[in-house]
Amino acid sequence: MKYTVVGTAGHVDHGKTTLIKALTGIDTDRLKEEKERGMSIDLGFAYLNLSSGVCAEIIDVPGHEHFIKNMLAGVGALDLVLFIVAANEGVMPQTKEHLDILQLLQVKKGIIVITKIDLVEKDWLDLVSESVKELVQNTFLEGAPIVHFSAMSGSGLEILKSKIEEIALSIEPKNASLPLRLPIDRIFKMEGFGTIITGTLVSGILKINDEVEILPKGIKTRVRQIQSHKGKTNQAFAGQRVGINLAGIKTEELNRGDVISQPACLSPSNLLDAQLTLLKTSPHPLQNRTRIRLYIETGEFLGRVILLDKEVIKPGEDGLVQFRLEQLTSAAKDDRFIIRLYSPMITIGGGKILNPHPKKHKRFKKEVIEELFAYKKGAPEDLVEQVLMNTSENIISVDELSKMVNLSKPEIENILQVLTQKKSILCLHPEELVIHKERLDGLKTKILETLKEFHSRQPLKLNVSKEEIRSKLKLEEKIYGFCLNELVKENSIILVKDKLHLTEHRLCYTPEQEKIKRQIEKVYLEGQFSPPDIEEVIANLGAKPEIVREVISSLFELGILVELEEGLIFHKDILEKAKQILHTYLVKNSSITVSEYRQLLNSSRKYTLPILQYFDTINFTKRIGDKRVLA
Image (cartoon, rainbow, N blue to C red):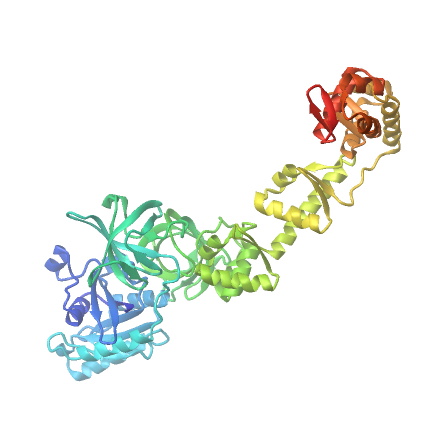
């Protein structure tokens, strides 16, 4: 079955609830106070099964100016609106305000219903019809069908049903392939069942026993029962109104405006980047940091609006803004919203969310404005590429990307496949992480520049630790490792274990350092298998100790000097000579003791044992008891 969300709009006492009752047989005024006052105060719900198999899920909204907040909670998910004007009163203040709201929310389809036609003469009815046509010029209702209706006689009712069915068949269904999202509009307790919530599924599929998350609090729970107008059901689809029995949740834990979603699908935030249109009827320009009431889906949120690309937004103008809210909300990209002044509570504008979880921006930053224009205008493929280029994170997961652009994971994966073929992006598997090639190239350049700077500051140090460079650049482990591997493939760096240096880097000695280097090498070559203590070498060279230590450190890095244990240092050529002597002996004798090797080297146990232990560690020899054999 196809589901279409139909809502009412119009001034108080213009017959919205009466019309819904005539259409469906359901009285949507359920509260005692509504019955007593004869006026809708909160949202009401009904349904209309049409002959074509379409189910119109109907939301009846209050028309009184004091209950605009409740009206806004009901119109966020509308596919089709019944725009109602009473013939005996004509266009009234809330008629105009509701039209502004519907226009800002970009409701696409509508039917104009002129009610109470039995109370006026035909000439007056014609005048009212003309005034409504004039009101809706240049709006989505221009050219919409007009139906004249009388609750007394039922005149126009069948025509209205026919028009609803005709338009409903042409409406594209809500996206069931996107993750589950259901904004809560009612919360109550039912004896024997516990907490019940109601709402309209704006995307996804809901099934019994599904694990769900209630945002923004992040409460995890399970769906115990699902109820639609047909009764109990095992699953519900995007566009369908449902009641849900939740396991282990108290009513006081929930609020209207909370969102039920697939776990880890949405990220709550109190910052939202948006495109805002100020109504032409706004009483004055919108100033930076104005305190406002923001309405998204079924929720109301207080906060301030930061103007990002203009000093002020004048009535009738658009602007890029960031909302800084006093509570967390769980919006998605492209969600429509309405804003009203904090006080007096009048509707001044609305628009759509561009980035539902941005960072705090400074005003008039060129790169921020460019990024938001990309969110605003881009086709899906361009948008994904722009997000990857401009996101504050170097690398993001496919799931996170799906949230940022509000596309289903299969849609994202198809786009990434195209961008990979174009060599615009790189996907890291199996982690499902994505980075734009320009970002990757920029990171590799930063690594090379940081290494070059390090080498210029410490010309006698060959290597730098991987972690030192990563910390300086504040890079994520995965993307840093990926960048290093790419740089190794390109022969731009030499990477050995946890050390690296530029391939082109060579140690650069001053004449004094070069002289000290030769002296140190000579001392250790002449020391043969009984090398001098390092402190003796430093003291006897006659140069500044810090310079000698610097040169010795460079010789360690070059592998010319090898420290077998603390303070015990050999020249690499001497160790190679010791290795050849040992190899020659073991080829003939198969094993050797420390004492036998000491005699071969004409040295002492102090030096001989560490040399053998070193050969064990490099797998040249193997110890068996008190003897060594070739490994």
